[in-house]
Length: 171
Image 1: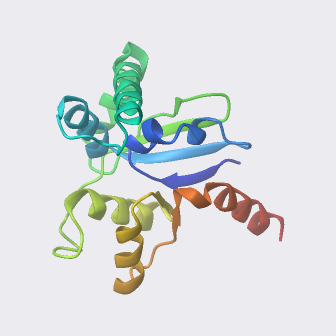
Image 2 (image 1 turned 90 degrees about the horizontal axis):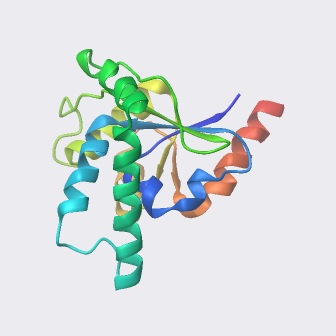
């Protein structure tokens, strides 16, 4: 059984270690975050503080978009887009990592506290009973302060999050 996390598609481009985990992992990714990759690719705004890091991440975003546009992967993604909350078949991202796209719907449940993508992450996490994996410290703070009933991990704690599930399963 693989460990599951809800996260944004851009995390796969920024954090390469997510693609080479020590044990099987499935990333459940709201479709809107896949669409956000196109905006990030075309944006003049830097994603990273250092120019060479920014070029590298934008290259990885282009590669991820191209991978999602491959016929088999595109077909898997498009199948889930006609029904709210439908999930794609797994798309392999390496030997132990796969991504599942979910056609999540922002219903403004968290209105002013969270933007639409953050809301979709929260709702997907609650619906799938899967923790969120993010690099956004402010989001983690707002989740905790708002008492939102989801588990959340900082990407810097990815290895710990993977071990945490192993610990819980073995008890």
